Image (cartoon, rainbow, N blue to C red; front, top):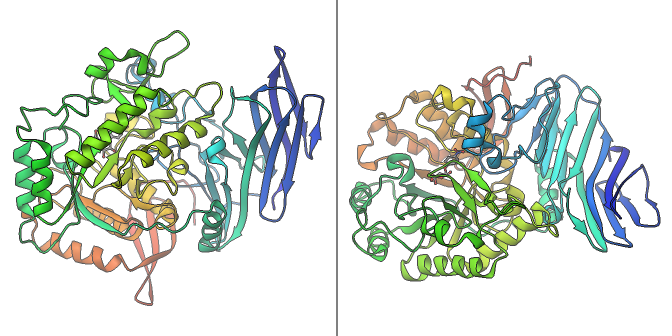
Length: 554
Ligand code: 9PG
């Protein structure tokens, strides 16, 4: 167990602000703070005599960092870049982006930029829900929350000060009688030991879903899909050796984001059930993309249902990002919103006949929690709603705070979008941590690999093998393929299968081989990604040129 330095609990009551700082259980006439800890657990329970507004709750532990250690702190949601850091690095937020641009596209909404601070001090790093420190002998010190449904946990390091802090994301939450504050598993051991124990304590059994191969329209056509592109892409798979399990139609079929019952007839003149029928005839499960908690400014929903939106105190809808015409969150506690989502899913599954729902931009649900809920509580309720309304279809979660998706979705995206360039366009590199980038998503796949087969089946986003329409070198595409096969269970592409040549086929063969391999050690050392894998009883180490520097030796 890590040594507790201090626990800080601040709250507002009777219009005044109070702070309690302690290193053991304590109480006063309003509140009682109970600390329960043993070799592997650290729990904080609050009991309140009168309702209080919590403004801060955190526990600071002592930890001795050394130069060789690597720190992983899980990023806010699916797309947030997440990798191991050396002890002298910093994390970049969005302060470097000019304010007018930041605001126009609501960059702060994509991630944790309004939730936690980005420090410029070396070694001051942070993440959500779980994180670890790995030493040179591949021993893991895992700090992982068992209570994200009560509120998210921000895990912070200050390597120079020698501290790890776990802070509950519950500021502004009004607690009535009691609150399950921090609930941590703090375990030390091998990678498998600590992660197995984490999911055992969470009570999440190994996922039932299997690995799937598939096609998604997004990274070939983006929003420019139509009956004809779908038919053409389907034809590409006819009689081919790369049998796919799923064929998923992505963004672009609807008249506007939010108007899920309204199909763009100019692109899709036939009813959607005709398309799903074609997919089924080709022997695949049809999948469809929906962003159930948001609507864009140009949607009918946004124009007509203002009272369905999550708003500021002044009654202005909260912008959740700049995609499409800019988009806003629906209030999941509004009964009409719930009925609408149920109807949309009923339509997609039972009328249109889709067996897989790719549910995207889910983080928007908790963009502003009501006073009696934390973000973690809202996200739990939101995810439960999706499961309840899915009519037996499989769910692929995307753009979601991961811990809220643990055990609640079949498949889950664990990284940002693959781009057609290794690191997207230079101006895009200035954006937030959630921006499309193959370079980033490859690292997410590697450093979140422990979730695959424990929390859900991981979706590392597509692999791309095509030679045209990309600036990625073959080696970069090969790295993407190999990492996806090693770390993920959703093996989707957006390539035109008919265009595959010898090199592409040999890469598919390699991916199939690597599906049975296991990474036993991984690290990023001065721009090189080093993976040690076990395959058919043999241990092989592969080094890949990646380009991400983490300014250390080893
Ligand atoms: C459809 C797409 C695809 C894709 C999803 C999601 O941060 N960003 O600017 C950002 C843009 C697009 C995006 C994710 C993040 O893509 O991940 O697979 O379904 O929506 O619009």
